[in-house]
Length: 199
Image (tube, rainbow, N blue to C red; front, side):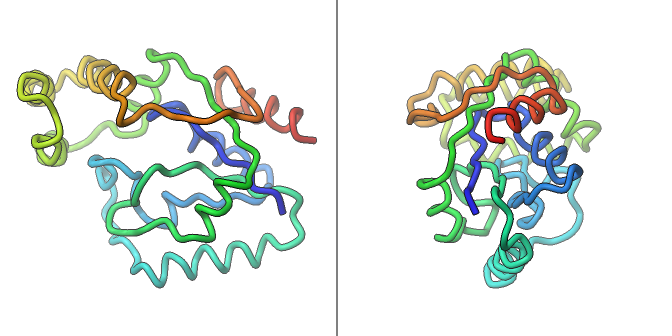
C-alpha cells in the first residue's frame, strides 16, 4: 500500500480532495476527522464533539489501515504538528517520509474562499478567543490589526492578512521536493488529475 501524501498551505483544498477520493471508494486516512480537530488554533470551531484519547486516535488509524489492506494506494494529508491535544503517530510520520508527495498549488484568493466556506458561519466570540491564543507568537502590531479585523467580522481581510504572514514566515514555509504538482481547479478536477498521474 503506497501512501499518497497531500501537501499545501492552509486553505489549499486538501481536505476537499480527500472527501472526493473517499466518496469514490478510495482508501483515505482523514486524520483531521479522526482527531475531531482541523489542526490550527481554529481547529475546534463549529465542532461540538470531543477529541478522542491518544490511544483511541491511534486505534482508529490502525483499524482503518487494516480495513484498507490490499489497496494499492492510501491517501492522506500532511499534518505539520499536533491535531489539538493529539500527536501524529509514528506510523503516519513514516508514511510522510516514504509516500508519494503531492503539492496542491492554490492561489491566495481561492484559499481564502475555501477557508470562509469551511469555517463560516461561526460564533465570533469563539473565533476571537481562539485567535487570542496566538498573541505571544505574533508581532504586536500584526496581532492588534488582525484582532481588530476579527472583532469587526472582516473575515475575508483577516484571512488574506494572516495567510500572507504565514506564507512569508520561515517558520511556516514548506520544504522538500514533490513527485506531483497539481494547480488547483476545484476538488473534482484535482482528483481526476491526481488519479491520472498515479494510475
